[in-house]
Amino acid sequence: MATTFEQMRANVGKLLRGIDRYNPENLSTLERYVDTQARENTYDLEANLGVLKLYQFNPAYFQTTVTSQILLKALTNLPHTDFTLCKCMIDQTHQEERPIRQILYLGNLLETCHFQSFWCPAPTSKKISKIVSAAGSTT
Image (cartoon, rainbow, N blue to C red):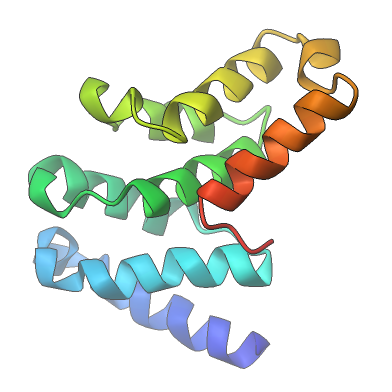
């Protein structure tokens, strides 16, 4: 499987160079790559930002599930600014959608060091599991 991911990474790297970076026809490939990152526990910020940029330019193609996966992957890279970068690329209207709104809330708890609130006993753990499931993450 690692070779499959590496092949995908190389192909996506080529897509993200030059004018093809903004071609909406590449979205399906990039979205599959996001799903692969979730399944194989890998992370590619540049590719994920490319997806979010394409969603900005082509709002009709916006996918809540893919965006949620991107946010969850970025959240796992705290304290780096990846989560903030991704959050800023999402339209306010889409930020209100579930589970995006919930992921942004969890991100805010972590960014503001409210770790006890984030890791509260069972109810929050179940809530986090539901958010991850709703986001379509398979990690």
